[in-house]
Image 1 (tube, rainbow, N blue to C red):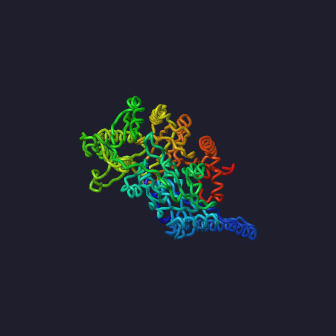
Image 2: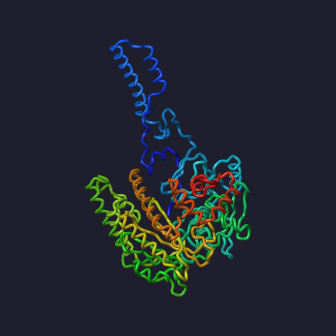
Image 3: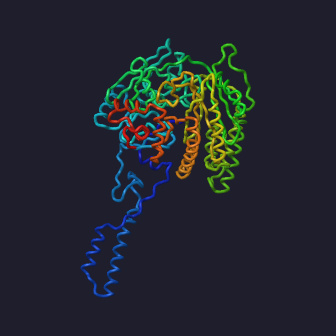
Length: 602
């Protein structure tokens, strides 16, 4: 649900708005010991015999203290040079930032690091030399993809390697429908290059800008109860490791390590090449309808078993559920003949009217802006998600305002019911909106032949939790399904072939660059997330997506999370492989060290 990696000069990044409030300058330090010692010496030598001498001494002491504090105040009154470490500069110790120091952030700007070392090798040989040299020097070399992960799982201050320049299709086997690619190739580029062979990927995540290596390593997924997460499409891979060099893994060659490394979180080696099992390229019919939870319960099993792709979009504070199914075009009947009841403009009418009304209301209260109507862009040019962002930015934490936006979204979907026909790589995409905080959990939902219905019960409790706590929860709550994965580190891992898993994502948008507002949204989101964690996760055996898990700052919460992960995943086997393949931990970062500590100390 996210876009692209941002790499830029660090000082320019300091000027941009951050989530956290700008730091205040530290308080002036007390006068130095040297000053006090000189004052004491002056006092002892003087030994004033009279009260007038005492008065004179106090006067000079006051002048001395005044001069000292004026000096400190003068220092802080002058602006810092453009290349200084802004407000983080310490007294008399600030220094310019090196020209080669860059800031790397994820797409939503929720996580960022500064590093001097950002490597982009152009071929396998350069990558191998880079990994070998970094290991010998014990320099960090964290693999980072497109920077789409909401939690910044690929970021490391010590250094990163990005394979954007290793983005070639190396081999296509049309008969077996297999393709071997360099891991830096992006999803959209890959499907564009292989479409002439009549093949494509089996499934897709919401967007197409991920690098194949990144989308593989974090256990990303599409939707469809018969289709597994994307790591299950990988049938062999080439891994560049610090300790053992380049190793080739497959079901035949070291299957245990192969399955472990398919969803290896970048901690076992740098994925350089992968061979992917593709499928025949097909046109799909997307059908969008609006339903409600009561009716869904009656048809849920049928929905999961009869549709190749299906997802539900729930609108908080309403009974609206948007149901989106995708299936191959019938060879006999062809695409459906359907004339939509409403035009695009008619579907957008409610949210446009709400925006106009809200803008007048908030201007009158002097909350947002005093610009004239002529300064406003033409709202007819905005997409639905763009207009939703603008609406939410007016008052993102006001529950009543968010409810109105949600109801306008429900009307938009009611007037957007209908069919759409296109190739799978076009149809399966989803406009997720602007920058956002996301938490997505995965939990078992029975089997395809016998769904447990726990997936819909989870949603019922989640919606009740939102309403009871009056959370300003925007739409949508997105629910998708996958088959199981054989990769033991996947949140959907299972030894039972028929198991299915449900994935539920909650969000809060960051529709503004105002630092204070982003900080407040962030705090409210983590309150929202904490409520779901405390009331739902253990009950439904739900675990967060690796690209969206956040590391707790509290020691006790962290220890509880570590124990919880160890009960679900083969952490000991994973750590053993890390020790063997990356003994100097150059591929690790703070997230991995905290989630999977290699020692007893947290």
